[in-house]
Length: 565
Image (cartoon, rainbow, N blue to C red; front, side, top):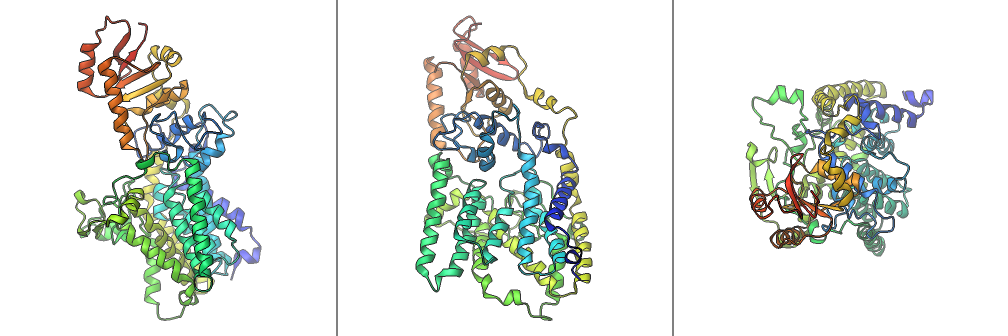
């Protein structure tokens, strides 16, 4: 019996209700993270502190020129490094849209909590759309779709890495693949949206798109396949170039491919750096299995889904499946398997991929030279397991729906949903603690403000603050970056996903020469984080020299040329 159809319930409203409820449940009912002026939930030393740079980079970006080129360049945050809003994972699409309303938005504004809630809803929306292509019973379809909202790799990141946790982009692409009425223009729109959110997800969407046009055109109209492939690739490249994804030049290539892969048994590994784990597997296997953390490759299927898979495998031969017999799946499955192989990286581990924590490395190999540009751009290879992960989810629920009448299937699904929620209850407790806000939100901002009255003068008389030596994510950079953003100063530093190390070295050399020559750019002051250089500067610039201030203020060692003491 299809209860939803019988009572004519509005699926869209039901999706809003359940996605909102699960958002609150897994956030530990910390609803205050939705407040646009509440920063207290991530302005503290915790697993949320990456969010600081998402927000701070937005505070710089909101004051950029509308017609700059590239459009999403963020010139005052890491001045000279040519970084854009892409390189701080601040959800470029959201930053670009909110930029037009900057004048009417609050002085300090964050959209990250709201984006997490939006991701919950869109996960519900697209998972239901996919399942409804194969499952006619709307009740079974809806209950099955709820599992996607508590999928461990989504849940592990959704409150911490808002851009890369937008897994609904993968689901949207899968829906486009299986739907018969999606136009080429719609695919291109999805590709543009995905590249404006996260590059990794965009590549997975493009891979699914390639599988789709291969399915439609390759055997009958191969010219159409190549035409659409290269036109869409050119479109993505054009959007990426004009918006600033490539603005850092060679810096877009970074090492780490050998560190950020997935293990062979990653789908069964419940351990993540966030603290995710399985109560059931921990109790059953902790004495014999060491669950070493999956870093970027965390893709645990969840106990509820694993039980469904075991059940399906036990009845695999009892009934043929129209789903499994269809040839429509071949291209997307091939793409998913190829991406899974890539996700293993060149260091192959059995379980967990953190070598020094005891995981078992099976073998390793040298990356072929022609693939090095790819692996340096997409170094967090473990993420590419997500496409296969969601296909496993889809095939599992569709196949399960073929075994039982709707009433029995609904009971089993509800029980397994509760089992999966209870099994990963630890992540709820973690987020309950980590996402807490201070009773008075403004107090969080007061804690990161610089206290000494001298900063009021510096904010008026200076235009730029440099940290030496320049490195990615310098020590205690947040307070100084926040000061710069509020006073309209630029910085040479920040925390970025990528950085051009050639430019970084050149800027460090230039600053060092300035220190030696005593010739400094106008209206620029320095934070010194090199102890040897600091000792030398204390000798060179005697406190009686009126043209330069040197001293420690609010925990920062400062060299301020031209400051009138």
